[in-house]
Amino acid sequence: MRVGFLGAGLIATYHSKSLRRSGADIERAGVYDPDRERAAAFAAASGHTVAGSEDEVIAGADAVYICTWTSEHPRQLAKAVAAGRHVFCEKPLATTLAAARQMADLALDAGIVNQVGLILRRSPAFLHAKHLVDDPAAGRLMAVVMRDDQFIPVQGHYASTWRADRALVGAGTLLEHSIHDIDMLTFLGGPIERVSAHTTNFHGHDGIEDVASATMRFAGGALATLTSVWHDNLARPSLRRIELFCERRHVVIDGDDWFGPVSWTDHDGTTGELAGDELAATVDQTRDGTANPDGEFIRAVELGIPASPDLSTAVVAHQVVDAMYVSAARDGATVEVT
Image 1 (cartoon, one colour):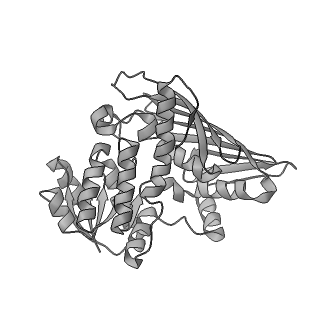
Image 2 (image 1 turned 30 degrees about the vertical axis):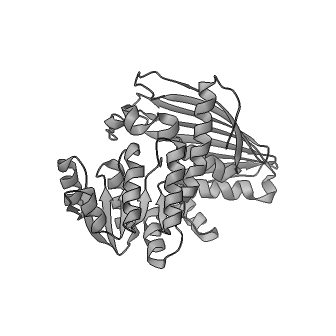
Image 3 (image 1 turned 90 degrees about the vertical axis):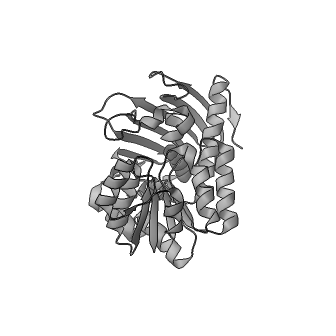
């Protein structure tokens, strides 16, 4: 299968390496980036061929990775879909909810295999936390407390200066980074019905909030809080801490959001903790879903089956984020998620 890339930055490099680790049998086709030097460096490291245009990449590929800044995603997806190509699109899908919905509808109507870069859906840490929460012995989920912080990614190893440009990125930490968190909250707790949120801006980039605080109510009755921060502490890249309070179990994900540790305490005093390879092995033994996300995308294309998470899954997270921005604009008023 011929795989092409639109965009040759940090996230494209991540997916290229992930494909290699997956062992997927692919032919590395074209890569295009407006920065020719970056495209050349990506090609030299990955085995792809530098293309002269987006159209050249799409014409020479069976599956296309869209790894560009957010405002480009809808246009590039439309091009790929028109050519009948399967698509892996990075998150967030678009700068607006309406555009994200249009993208998902377009992919669905075309019948292409599509997947979105909400990779935490395959995190051993989150998968095991969900297993612990869903266990009837835990009782009902009551509350979730999530903190997500990283240094603002216009610097350091991210070096994504475009994330300071509202026209390219749409908004700040809530849309660009914490859409992962919203997706994980729905993964763990189910549909979110209503939200209240506040945002603020310390760095001064127009329309790019760097702190967001939100409360949520799940359809099942549980409550959640999210604090998302973009700071300047380069010693803290992307770090999360999640506490899940059930009626008879307390679950914590701390440190690495892929390999944990995940710890838990039950009402009878029983405790446990899993991390690293032991965590990954335990999850592999109990349920499917920890496979490499990029390898799973290629497998879905090969078999002609739906990929997961798909663009429609991402739209659910976009709906919640959009409601949070509406709430923040109304000084924290409660907003229904629609």
